[in-house]
Amino acid sequence: MRVGAALMAVVALLGAQPPEEAGVAPGAPVPDSRPGEAFADPQVAALQRTAGDIQNELGALAGQIHEASAALDAASNSVREARTSREAADSAVRAQQAEVDRYTAALLNSYGRPNQFQVLLLAQSPRDFLDGSTLMARVQEYESQELTAAVARQRTAQEAEDKAQAAEKAAADRKADLSRRGDDATNRAAAVTGEFRAKLAATNEAVVAQQQAQSTRNSRTAANWRAYVAKIAGLPPGPATLPNGEHVLVLPPDTVRSVSAVIDALGKPYAPTHGDGPDAYSCDGLTRAAYGLTGSAGGQMAVLQPVSEPQPGDLVFLGPARYGVQGVGVVLDPRTMVTADARLVGVVVADIPPDVLGYARPSLPHRPAQPVPQRTDNGLLWRCGGVELPSGGWSGFPNGMIPASALCPIGIGAHRLRCDAARSFVLLSLAYQSVFGSPLCVTDSYRTFEEQVRLYGAKPALAAVPGTSNHGWGLAVDLCGPEKSWGTRERAWLDANGPGYGWVNPGWAQPGRGREEPWHWEFG
Image (cartoon, rainbow, N blue to C red; front, side):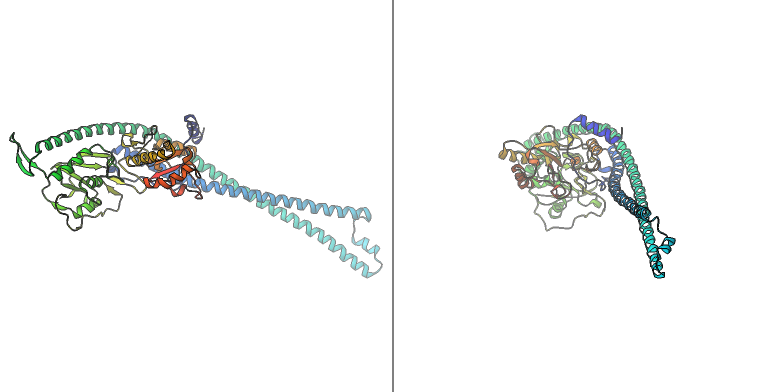
């Protein structure tokens, strides 16, 4: 059994196939080219490079197979046209031969076959003989020319048909060869899926363990901070000695409130967009929410007063310099900060890295915007400790291999999305329910790499190339129910209100674009 057929059989056993989703169309793959240090696990990075190679091959083959299919269709049409022309030429030769045969038979029945001797015997004068000879020559020449022309047309048509059949065979052979190569690549993609599954399970366990350790560190830090706040209650800002003889620095009330807000956000998920809380944060969104700031990390560094001796509550701006001001955290002590980390996909207590670009104190008056380190690296864009991809990639994990612990539920079945997308979808669904009495119906959300391979194997000409689907980033859903179809009242409401929550039916899925998918919605 060919791999494509085998994968279709597996899908059939598992139930209804999810609808195809273009994502990145076959033949135009977008590889995930993040460097290894951008991933939470170097082994996952290595596997993703392997998947990227297969993905590129699948994408190229999909385009070639599409072209070969078109070429075969054109060749088959040419064969049909040539066959029709040849059959018409055959009919013309038969008709011309029949005409000659009828003419000859008529003459033979009446006079015998005409010849020059008969003309001589029947002629009554030299003029009659010359006229009769000329007429006979013309008749014989006409008969010969008509039959010869018909036979020539027949020969030309047969040659055209033979040539068209040869072209059809060549096109069929090329398509068959490409299909075999496509099946082989799909087979290798399916095989590497087993490795992905094992690595993903191990990675997920490692991430869960890491998050548990992180949770312990977060809880310990939060307890220490709250104990500090209790100690300084009622004391004026500045150095102080507690009744037990302990020396402490009493921070200004505004700083205490801001740091307390940051501490309260510990454990909340990371979100690269819509990251100003209260449910999810980006690194600069966390500082905007806690300190009432505006702009990106670089914009904040530009207007805040720099300090050389940081204290708790100050901001630390992160590099390295070649990436520009790509991150920001809140200082807790000389070695520790709180930040929303893209690779750890959450608000965490973390060590202050060595590549610090500077410190600033939000409680001081703001200054006119000053130059800050700008990105000089022409590679991928870093933000909040991770890499952002133009294709929608985020966090320290590849498309389709994001651990469940890094995603958030949407309250419908087991469906999960990136946390900012999940939050917005929940709000959209609640608004929809308030109008129509039931929540949005969802058939598909986050889609693993393995599921993408299976769908591609079932519909290689329609489905997204594995590793490129927006489902694999946790940024897409497929809807069911009346809201999935154009022309319904529910769909009209969704078209009008979805964009306000960040959800749209993308342009390529709209009517008249050739890949209509009214059920497919993306966040961004």
